[in-house]
Image (tube, rainbow, N blue to C red; front, side, top):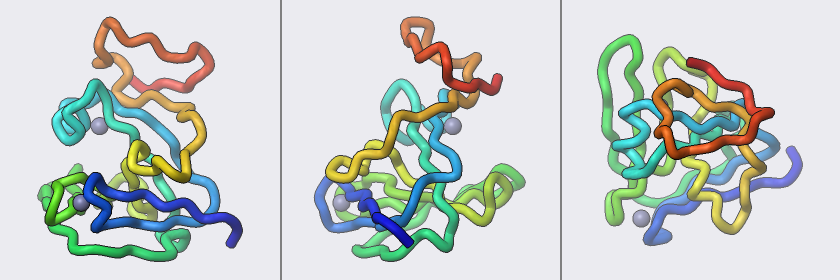
Length: 132
Ligand SMILES: [Zn+2]
Ligand SMILES: [Zn+2]
């Protein structure tokens, strides 16, 4: 299955380990990603469910109903959103918070989602793909 990478929450209690390379490595400028992270954008790295090799720690779930719904799994202790499953978008994959791969870094993203709502002061590499 090749090399694995581990994403870990702030307090270290929770982690998810994935194998191989992501199917999508994107940042997203939507309101939900800004609020989820408290940052200028979210970094979403999707791996096939079959590439998830381990999960550890006590996680709580934020379930958003509806067509664009998802389950977001966050550390019960420190609150870091570590990974999520969308019901419609890449339903056979698991989205992992890119910034949580501190010790096993993820390569540079190549996709900017909800690009038209990015903060005007943010400049991204010109060769990235974008979606409005
Ligand atoms: Zn934690
Ligand atoms: Zn988003």
